[in-house]
Length: 364
Ligand SMILES: [Mn+2]
Image (cartoon, rainbow, N blue to C red):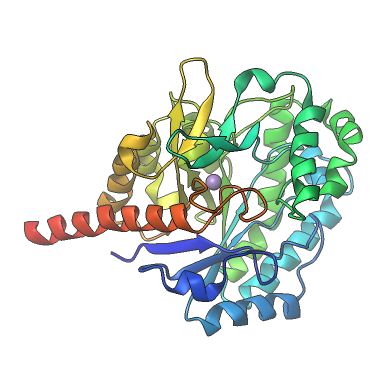
């Protein structure tokens, strides 16, 4: 089946894993990339895009998925400056379209991107994984930001969504978001999507919104992409084939009530991109990221893959965060984006997929 297996790559000099390394993982055909030095709102210039796309093509990969072109806070808040910023976003879309990009993954989370309390939490077998301790995420957004930023500084590593420039303005950002209710945030998302739609129709690029991670309000900030209902609403709100989802199973299933396979079955034609990640839940509400193997967590990885496969799905898929294995300690590896566990996850997914293909073939 023409599902396309991807791998997130942070770019030359910014990712300890090289394209040559990735080339050795069987089945990976798509590099999921971004210009990581760009701040939200900045224009991605053609020559900068061409440079990375050429690197990716030189190894025989496609460069059709970008993750992410981040959306400026002013757009999410709904300030007057948003129209100019939406124009810039459209310029990015048009520039990316010239170099064969087909999908842009983005998110619409206020202030914080993904949120965790421990980036190297022991799993119990000697490996470590990203961990969320519910009691630590209460009112004190500063201590979490400090933890992440200390890490960033110590290991000279930047995380998308956690740009030190933005984090330095945390109080200011919280103040700006204070009047933004959940309904207003939905309205602002609609305004943004309708604004960029002409550029999507021109270029054929699909905007694929990432699920909120974790899928609930944090620090009093509203979050939208939290469950099946939200997916329904988003797709209906701007009913265009270019308005799509990034089905991130790990983000959604941080709430164990979310059934990712059901969402996959229902919306397969509007899922442009899938992030496959497994979650292990603890009774007190904490959760740990887990190996991709179905039984290592409760996300239902096989069910999700089967739902996509059975629908004849032709989107892009990638292993999402993996655990840190062997020598992959802090400073050696980008948390969640080590080499080994994602390679294992890739093979697991392809194993399931190949078997489903074979069983289908035998039916015919
Ligand atoms: Mn994800």
